[in-house]
Image 1: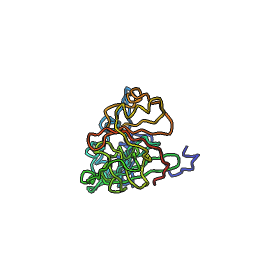
Image 2: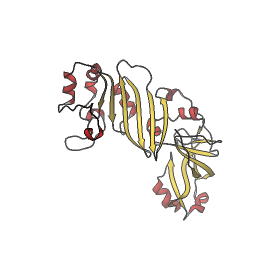
Image 3: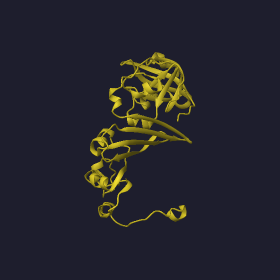
Image 4: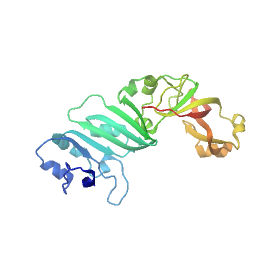
Length: 269
């Protein structure tokens, strides 16, 4: 493959990678690691200590041999645990494709002790949705809350993984429906890194209000709601598909609502 691609500056060493690193005397710009996520019995793992090699005890060695270390890990790895175990993390890149998180990429730099910048990206049909934030600012940010307005927004999977639930209200001028719902709204349409909808109607979640949906088609989503999508479809006899989008969610801490929407095609970069 290297020959076909004309990559003549690559040299392959058939040796244990860590042993190779121990033996070099020069210092590199980057060292990239992709620890195996399968154990000897082929069981899939995602914790840093279970991957092969376990990079944690070797970090100091790696940082003596390179200015930067880039580690690819499973998207299942908890970000707080990763930051705690790795230390000196300068950037975390959360990479999603078609709204499915595929990889976490950790940039580690010797001597770095400042804020961790989180960069999220979602690749979809030639479009790149991006949103960046500072990890420590999330806890210090006070979000703005509001009732459903004209438009509804659902963050993409990379943002949901990163947990940028508060800062996004400040940066994108939207309001959050509820602390735990992770849905946003605004009077004016904004470019949003995720799915955007026009709100047609908001109603209470009860059989009387939902009776008219029986036998109709709709795309159902739940956010901070006590019932699953399957239960809702069966209970209210809603078929899958169509142009309507129904969000079953909680607003104002305890109010169970259904938000009937139509999808808006927007581009956010």
